[in-house]
Image (tube, rainbow, N blue to C red; front, side, top):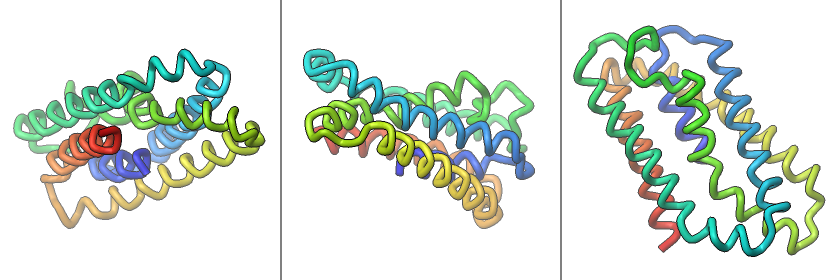
Length: 173
């Protein structure tokens, strides 16, 4: 659902529906959602317990900073596009950051898989495919819905990232 929410807000920042960017984001989100449980599965109890103590803070800070930056940049320029120096959710560096931030909690899921003897390859493949598809759907919803919000979509996207970060913090309290 984190990928889906970020995809909706990212789709709303597109000036034109850009299929390569849509596939790139969906692939990155699907890949990271699938790879994080694998890392968690093989990392073991000690590593996961150490990471679990602060993973939610890392995800919160990343999403909060990106959200604030998007809101700030929405006041600087009127036109929504990724051709300027503003934060583009489809840029490689930003995509990596968003992918990690929205999938970091999946590390503990991988550890859980090792405890309950879940078939690993089937599980991570399903997670990756569903994340990929939900990202495609989310980008399309955001792109089509941006007309309802006109030029305010970048502010809304920033607030969604901040709220997502807050949701992660609240769920760990």
